Image (tube, rainbow, N blue to C red; front, side, top):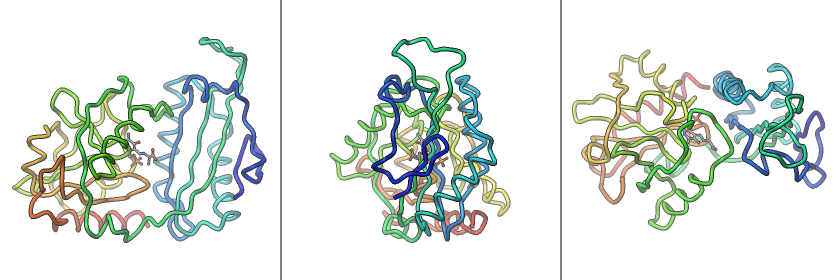
Length: 278
Ligand code: PDD
């Protein structure tokens, strides 16, 4: 597979990054994941907006122009013949001798690779998935998409231990988000509820696209906090991310949601999201 490192396209075994890279040493780096369907990038403008925002918040310069990033993503998709899958981008603050503080002139590193992956009509999309609940132990700037993902790695392991592939994280009784997804519930009276964006969660690109699609189709939306107890009583639930689109959730921490099958509003959201995104 061909990967990208700081301006070069190289076979994966030849790709090199310094052991003094600050992403490696300090988690001083940010990333984005965009989906590819039929060779086309999905919601990529939203992902690049968020990439620029993450860099701004951490005072890391854009390594190359936005147009150059898009051209690079497209080159990787073509070279690796990605019909359906993901493009991963990571920008680190750069490499220099280890020191918590960094030089103002440090040049960022940009790496990228593709992954082939079936994203549409998966078993999870058809049947829904079970999610576990775990404590949200992350720092309080979760709106920045950093590669400091140890809490999420642990959350996924905990989820796996109870037969789930995703964990929903809980802080002060309220659900924040999934380990790698945004969470939604549908109330008994048919409203789609999701948490408002804040420093406590990552502002999901798929979330934004879903909210736009839902508004365009006159579905009722409520942006507010909700507890785990409210989620157990929901009529339906689903989660969103670039790598899973709209995935029904049929069980939360052992509590069956609705009749344990993906519900009609979730099905509608899956359909209208894809209509808008493709
Ligand atoms: N994760 N919340 C968290 C903590 C995430 O890591 C992600 C995405 C999302 C959903 O955001 P979006 O819709 O923009 O993908 C929410 C990516 C897919 C990942 O880490 O692989």
